[in-house]
Length: 248
Image (tube, rainbow, N blue to C red; front, side, top):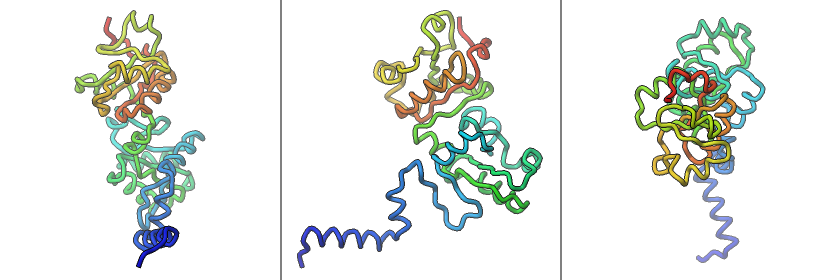
């Protein structure tokens, strides 16, 4: 039997719905920034990337529950670090059982935020949520992350392929900067991706941006992240904080 075009479309939609179910069909139409992992029967609810951004914009508590070293190397800006096993420290810092808290860790296969959230639910907390997509998906969606001084020192000591981006003015860059640094200012990410200042043949290379201030560095880091450098970050302090690391 031959189907006309309209009948074929109806049959295709029906077949797709039966094969994947209404939940999966909905997932196909959800913008990725509004999606969650969609775990079955979660003890605590998830938040999407867009929801997390709104939470951070209102300065609500978002806790990175990975190790202190991981946090220092790269974390979502505005988050605070408590390791998953520091339960007593968390309950001391947030003693109100109704406090809205969001946990994240190393992505869909990381169990830290889930284990910690379930432990706090057992203790009576009612406002616990998770960004279960975690740091990897945050970065994959073109969002930048922050590096602290301890993390920058760790990277400089062990990663010989890292690229350091000085976002300051050309004159300041010429007077002194970090070893192996390149000068990329606001609005130059596109050109830097083409002219070799950024490693466009290996976009997994670690790229760390620093500037006169953390805010200045973040602007450039966000531009670089949107050029698909998913392993990029920015130093949250000022260039003055890097005095002992600078090359002359």
